[in-house]
Length: 173
Image 1: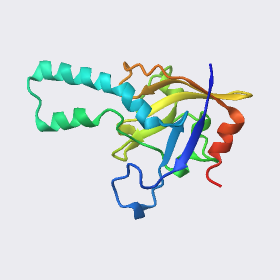
Image 2: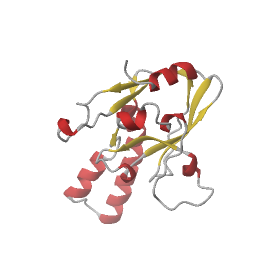
Image 3: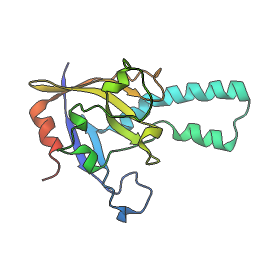
């Protein structure tokens, strides 16, 4: 597996629709130079189109609320805050995220970390997770998935050089 690059940028004005004085500091995640939300959006578009077609076949013409929902779903994520991203927080170092949902003891989501949260601000509404493992020289992300759409196949895995990854997690200088 080729090594990828990761960057965490504090960009308070990006994708935040509420008052910037709230103190929320989203940290935009870039993997191999691309905004990770955009990467995910491209993957989700065909899945959402398929769900829309199935719903339309079942219900006939979709009302305005359903039309808006399907238009808004792909890539509907908000990056995590600085306090949820940077060290000493261990989220991006493989600490499992407690989804708050009742899960079977062997459910793979019990071992996953949170990558992105719902754009509405309620994390559990629509969250993207991955298995993050820290090895001697690399940090890997595997089994990337949408908690509420376990049938969607993101087919993503990344390996990052550990030293550079941990340096990025120290935050802006």
